[in-house]
Image (cartoon, rainbow, N blue to C red; front, side, top):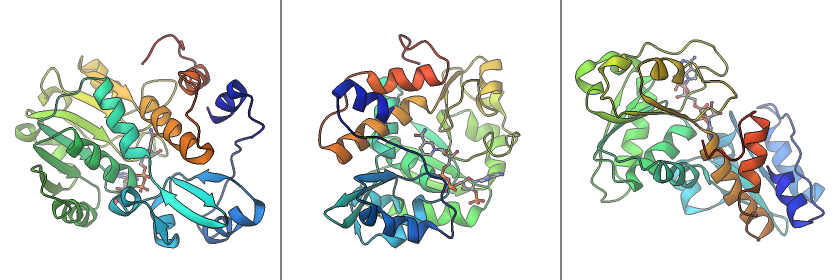
Length: 266
Ligand code: NAP
């Protein structure tokens, strides 16, 4: 996506991928100014660790406790996060109307999902996570952030078979790597959800994910995280290069890579 944008703008810059282990994250961050890099994106499992390691954070990264963009500001590292805004923009494009939203997971992606749902004026957010204590601590963090009215509750993954809860859900977001790193998804009672419930997977892939496949079979709306990925990348491009990404170029590059028709938005 970034290289397609550089090519379209005729900029002599390149975006490359590096595999960095957990142990090497501190030294990889220190290498950014040493190598004269403009900035980097970070992904799973580094986002929360980077927020602890970088001193200078945007308000958004601080709220989320996670960093997905590091910008080299004349040798000083600045950590930001474009995930929540990327998801919010995609949910708006999808005309998602919120009452109850269920967020599965309690990491950086889940925090971004909660922020996006609050900005879209969800009235109730339920966090469902394998480790309920992590869901509780995320719920506490967001409950006290500002005066917005959404109630935030924490549960285990058993909430996903609670028909009474599911039949009120307008949106269910998967913010875990279930379906990416392990093939199976947790038990979820898809049929208990309203017919217009939107299933949104932060994972993007050429074929429907383990979370979305049963949603499609139950004739529910099912969207993967490609739109969020494009949006967060366009925002990151602006942060790194101080120019807007060229219209539609990054989206077309991603959709082509995923084997989808670039003319189709989703
Ligand atoms: P993270 O911080 O590592 O959080 C992972 C969460 O998933 C944790 O709550 C963890 O539960 C849960 N989990 C992990 N393995 C599990 C399993 N086998 N069964 C049940 N729960 C499991 O990860 P993240 O950064 O939030 O990312 C989550 C996903 O979102 C990733 O797949 C990532 O690629 C995707 N993502 C996509 C975009 C996009 O632009 N589309 C942006 C951000 C993230 P515990 O608390 O119990 O460990």
